[in-house]
Image 1 (cartoon, helix red, strand yellow):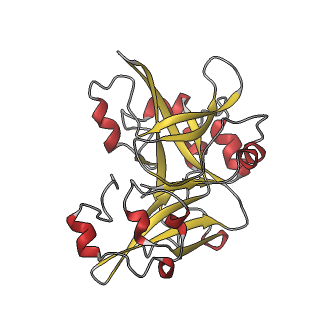
Image 2 (cartoon, helix red, strand yellow):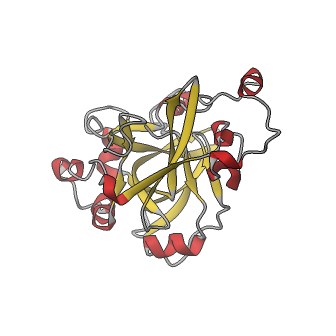
Image 3 (spheres, one colour):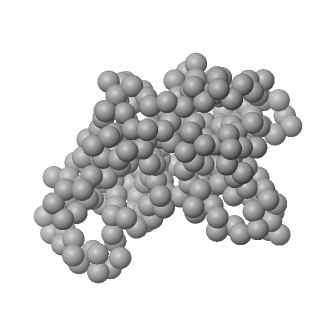
Length: 247
Protein backbone atom coordinates (compact mmCIF):
# COMPACT_ATOMS: atom_id res chain seq x y z
CA UNK A 1 0.00 0.00 0.00
CA UNK A 2 1.94 3.06 1.18
CA UNK A 3 3.85 2.89 4.44
CA UNK A 4 7.02 4.91 3.74
CA UNK A 5 7.69 7.97 1.57
CA UNK A 6 10.49 10.43 0.78
CA UNK A 7 10.59 14.22 0.41
CA UNK A 8 14.12 15.51 -0.04
CA UNK A 9 13.73 18.24 -2.66
CA UNK A 10 14.43 21.90 -1.92
CA UNK A 11 11.51 23.85 -0.37
CA UNK A 12 11.59 26.21 -3.36
CA UNK A 13 10.90 23.32 -5.71
CA UNK A 14 7.93 22.28 -3.56
CA UNK A 15 6.64 25.87 -3.66
CA UNK A 16 7.00 25.95 -7.44
CA UNK A 17 5.23 22.64 -7.96
CA UNK A 18 2.28 23.57 -5.75
CA UNK A 19 2.29 27.23 -6.85
CA UNK A 20 2.81 28.60 -3.35
CA UNK A 21 4.49 31.87 -2.43
CA UNK A 22 6.23 30.28 0.54
CA UNK A 23 6.58 26.95 2.33
CA UNK A 24 7.81 26.00 5.81
CA UNK A 25 11.50 25.20 6.24
CA UNK A 26 11.72 21.46 5.57
CA UNK A 27 14.63 19.15 6.23
CA UNK A 28 15.37 16.55 3.51
CA UNK A 29 13.67 13.29 4.50
CA UNK A 30 14.51 9.91 2.99
CA UNK A 31 12.50 7.61 5.26
CA UNK A 32 9.24 9.21 6.40
CA UNK A 33 7.13 6.75 8.39
CA UNK A 34 3.64 6.76 9.95
CA UNK A 35 3.12 8.89 13.09
CA UNK A 36 5.68 11.40 11.78
CA UNK A 37 4.84 14.89 10.47
CA UNK A 38 4.57 15.30 6.70
CA UNK A 39 4.11 18.31 4.42
CA UNK A 40 0.48 18.43 3.27
CA UNK A 41 -1.20 20.95 0.95
CA UNK A 42 -4.74 21.85 1.95
CA UNK A 43 -7.29 24.63 2.01
CA UNK A 44 -6.40 26.54 5.18
CA UNK A 45 -9.36 26.29 7.59
CA UNK A 46 -11.33 29.54 7.63
CA UNK A 47 -8.78 31.48 5.54
CA UNK A 48 -9.84 30.91 1.96
CA UNK A 49 -6.27 30.21 0.83
CA UNK A 50 -4.12 27.14 0.36
CA UNK A 51 -1.28 26.33 2.70
CA UNK A 52 1.44 23.75 3.17
CA UNK A 53 1.08 22.45 6.72
CA UNK A 54 2.83 19.74 8.71
CA UNK A 55 0.32 17.07 9.72
CA UNK A 56 0.81 13.76 11.49
CA UNK A 57 0.58 10.63 9.33
CA UNK A 58 -2.25 8.36 10.50
CA UNK A 59 -5.77 9.81 10.44
CA UNK A 60 -7.60 10.23 13.75
CA UNK A 61 -11.27 11.21 13.23
CA UNK A 62 -12.54 14.12 15.29
CA UNK A 63 -14.95 11.80 17.11
CA UNK A 64 -12.40 9.07 17.93
CA UNK A 65 -11.86 8.33 21.63
CA UNK A 66 -8.69 6.29 21.14
CA UNK A 67 -5.79 8.22 19.62
CA UNK A 68 -4.07 4.95 18.74
CA UNK A 69 -6.62 4.47 15.96
CA UNK A 70 -4.35 6.61 13.76
CA UNK A 71 -1.79 3.81 13.49
CA UNK A 72 -4.43 1.70 11.74
CA UNK A 73 -5.47 4.43 9.32
CA UNK A 74 -2.30 5.48 7.54
CA UNK A 75 -4.01 4.43 4.29
CA UNK A 76 -7.62 4.52 3.08
CA UNK A 77 -8.98 2.46 0.19
CA UNK A 78 -10.26 4.95 -2.40
CA UNK A 79 -13.08 2.58 -3.35
CA UNK A 80 -14.75 2.87 0.09
CA UNK A 81 -13.98 6.36 1.43
CA UNK A 82 -17.45 7.70 0.58
CA UNK A 83 -19.05 5.18 2.96
CA UNK A 84 -16.56 4.49 5.75
CA UNK A 85 -17.45 6.53 8.89
CA UNK A 86 -13.79 7.44 9.49
CA UNK A 87 -13.37 8.99 6.03
CA UNK A 88 -16.70 10.06 4.50
CA UNK A 89 -16.87 13.51 6.14
CA UNK A 90 -13.24 14.25 5.30
CA UNK A 91 -13.91 13.11 1.72
CA UNK A 92 -16.54 15.85 1.47
CA UNK A 93 -14.76 18.67 3.30
CA UNK A 94 -11.10 17.95 4.09
CA UNK A 95 -9.29 16.69 1.01
CA UNK A 96 -5.55 17.32 0.79
CA UNK A 97 -2.38 16.58 -1.17
CA UNK A 98 0.61 14.87 0.41
CA UNK A 99 3.95 16.11 -0.94
CA UNK A 100 6.44 13.40 -1.91
CA UNK A 101 9.28 12.69 -4.31
CA UNK A 102 9.22 8.92 -3.87
CA UNK A 103 7.67 6.02 -1.99
CA UNK A 104 8.96 2.59 -1.01
CA UNK A 105 7.64 -0.88 -1.58
CA UNK A 106 9.12 -4.29 -0.74
CA UNK A 107 9.41 -7.47 -2.80
CA UNK A 108 10.01 -10.93 -1.39
CA UNK A 109 13.28 -12.27 -2.74
CA UNK A 110 14.76 -15.47 -1.38
CA UNK A 111 14.38 -15.44 2.37
CA UNK A 112 13.96 -11.71 2.79
CA UNK A 113 12.47 -8.54 1.33
CA UNK A 114 14.19 -6.22 -1.13
CA UNK A 115 13.15 -2.55 -0.84
CA UNK A 116 12.50 -0.48 -3.97
CA UNK A 117 12.02 3.26 -4.34
CA UNK A 118 9.32 4.30 -6.79
CA UNK A 119 9.19 7.74 -8.41
CA UNK A 120 7.45 9.72 -11.13
CA UNK A 121 9.70 10.22 -14.16
CA UNK A 122 10.98 13.73 -14.90
CA UNK A 123 9.37 15.27 -11.79
CA UNK A 124 11.23 16.51 -8.74
CA UNK A 125 8.13 15.98 -6.60
CA UNK A 126 4.52 14.90 -6.95
CA UNK A 127 1.24 14.80 -5.02
CA UNK A 128 -0.51 11.91 -3.31
CA UNK A 129 -4.26 12.16 -2.70
CA UNK A 130 -5.10 12.39 0.98
CA UNK A 131 -7.73 13.25 3.59
CA UNK A 132 -7.15 15.10 6.84
CA UNK A 133 -8.97 15.65 10.11
CA UNK A 134 -8.60 17.54 13.37
CA UNK A 135 -9.00 16.10 16.84
CA UNK A 136 -9.16 18.26 19.97
CA UNK A 137 -7.10 16.77 22.79
CA UNK A 138 -6.16 17.97 26.30
CA UNK A 139 -2.74 18.90 24.89
CA UNK A 140 -4.29 20.92 22.06
CA UNK A 141 -5.57 20.26 18.52
CA UNK A 142 -4.06 17.29 16.68
CA UNK A 143 -4.23 17.37 12.87
CA UNK A 144 -3.69 14.09 11.05
CA UNK A 145 -4.03 12.64 7.55
CA UNK A 146 -4.26 9.45 5.55
CA UNK A 147 -3.01 8.55 2.06
CA UNK A 148 -5.52 7.11 -0.40
CA UNK A 149 -4.67 3.93 -2.26
CA UNK A 150 -5.90 2.25 -5.43
CA UNK A 151 -5.12 -0.93 -7.35
CA UNK A 152 -1.49 -1.23 -8.44
CA UNK A 153 -0.40 -0.46 -11.99
CA UNK A 154 1.83 -2.77 -14.05
CA UNK A 155 5.01 -1.37 -12.51
CA UNK A 156 4.02 -1.75 -8.86
CA UNK A 157 1.93 -4.93 -9.14
CA UNK A 158 4.91 -7.35 -8.87
CA UNK A 159 5.65 -5.79 -5.46
CA UNK A 160 2.17 -5.13 -4.06
CA UNK A 161 -1.45 -5.18 -5.23
CA UNK A 162 -2.08 -1.62 -3.99
CA UNK A 163 -0.36 1.71 -4.55
CA UNK A 164 -0.89 5.32 -3.43
CA UNK A 165 -3.08 7.55 -5.59
CA UNK A 166 -0.83 9.97 -7.50
CA UNK A 167 -2.61 12.99 -9.01
CA UNK A 168 -1.52 14.98 -12.05
CA UNK A 169 -1.81 18.79 -12.11
CA UNK A 170 -5.43 18.84 -13.25
CA UNK A 171 -6.35 16.17 -10.73
CA UNK A 172 -4.71 18.13 -7.91
CA UNK A 173 -6.79 21.18 -8.73
CA UNK A 174 -10.05 19.25 -8.76
CA UNK A 175 -9.20 17.34 -5.60
CA UNK A 176 -8.63 20.55 -3.62
CA UNK A 177 -11.58 22.44 -5.14
CA UNK A 178 -14.12 22.60 -2.31
CA UNK A 179 -16.90 23.44 -4.76
CA UNK A 180 -16.52 20.00 -6.35
CA UNK A 181 -18.86 17.72 -4.39
CA UNK A 182 -19.79 15.18 -7.05
CA UNK A 183 -18.55 11.95 -5.50
CA UNK A 184 -18.34 10.07 -8.77
CA UNK A 185 -16.29 12.86 -10.37
CA UNK A 186 -13.91 12.88 -7.42
CA UNK A 187 -13.61 9.10 -7.31
CA UNK A 188 -12.77 9.06 -11.02
CA UNK A 189 -9.50 10.80 -10.09
CA UNK A 190 -8.51 7.97 -7.76
CA UNK A 191 -7.09 5.57 -10.33
CA UNK A 192 -3.67 3.97 -10.87
CA UNK A 193 -1.06 6.37 -12.20
CA UNK A 194 0.24 5.38 -15.68
CA UNK A 195 3.06 2.87 -15.28
CA UNK A 196 5.00 4.29 -18.23
CA UNK A 197 5.32 7.61 -16.39
CA UNK A 198 6.93 5.98 -13.35
CA UNK A 199 10.21 4.25 -12.53
CA UNK A 200 11.61 2.17 -9.70
CA UNK A 201 14.95 0.82 -8.55
CA UNK A 202 16.21 -1.36 -5.70
CA UNK A 203 17.77 0.38 -2.70
CA UNK A 204 19.84 -0.58 0.31
CA UNK A 205 17.98 -2.45 3.04
CA UNK A 206 19.18 0.27 5.42
CA UNK A 207 15.74 1.80 4.75
CA UNK A 208 14.00 -1.20 6.30
CA UNK A 209 14.44 0.27 9.76
CA UNK A 210 12.12 3.31 10.08
CA UNK A 211 14.55 4.83 12.58
CA UNK A 212 17.20 5.15 9.86
CA UNK A 213 17.47 8.37 7.86
CA UNK A 214 19.71 9.95 5.24
CA UNK A 215 20.77 9.43 1.64
CA UNK A 216 21.87 5.88 2.31
CA UNK A 217 18.17 4.97 2.31
CA UNK A 218 18.06 5.54 -1.47
CA UNK A 219 21.53 4.16 -2.25
CA UNK A 220 21.85 1.07 -4.49
CA UNK A 221 22.12 -2.25 -2.60
CA UNK A 222 25.75 -2.66 -3.72
CA UNK A 223 26.66 0.52 -1.86
CA UNK A 224 26.31 -1.05 1.58
CA UNK A 225 29.59 -1.31 3.53
CA UNK A 226 31.43 -4.63 3.22
CA UNK A 227 31.64 -4.91 6.98
CA UNK A 228 27.89 -4.57 7.42
CA UNK A 229 26.54 -7.06 9.93
CA UNK A 230 24.39 -9.95 8.79
CA UNK A 231 20.62 -9.78 8.38
CA UNK A 232 20.06 -12.38 11.13
CA UNK A 233 22.03 -10.16 13.51
CA UNK A 234 19.95 -7.14 12.60
CA UNK A 235 16.75 -9.09 13.07
CA UNK A 236 17.86 -10.15 16.53
CA UNK A 237 18.05 -6.43 17.31
CA UNK A 238 14.53 -5.95 15.93
CA UNK A 239 15.49 -4.31 12.63
CA UNK A 240 13.04 -6.26 10.50
CA UNK A 241 11.81 -5.05 7.09
CA UNK A 242 8.23 -5.18 8.36
CA UNK A 243 8.93 -3.03 11.40
CA UNK A 244 7.05 0.25 11.21
CA UNK A 245 5.02 -0.75 8.14
CA UNK A 246 1.54 -0.41 9.54
CA UNK A 247 -0.59 -1.71 6.70
